[in-house]
Length: 123
Image (tube, rainbow, N blue to C red):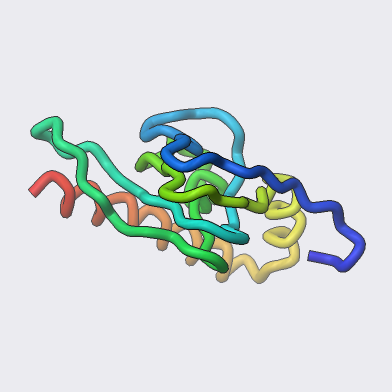
């Protein structure tokens, strides 16, 4: 991002949900500036499985930004967390500059991650 770009920041309280699994809506990704995010997914048996944690410097929500599909997991703030929102417009601007082969690989990676995660959670 350029030095003069305005970044959208939002602070989430501990236990606040950023997005829910299956949610369709704002097409964006999130960069953790401070705090901690828990990523979890519902399993076929109705339980919830924690996929991992995202801490300062990490990014999440990027898959919906790439393929515009519903959120594959839930993201929840573990602590008070400040997030920088990566908008669809800024992502698309950068993606247009990428080599078509790289763009195709990105879409394949996202599809494979979605498929693998579903298999792991439901086994």
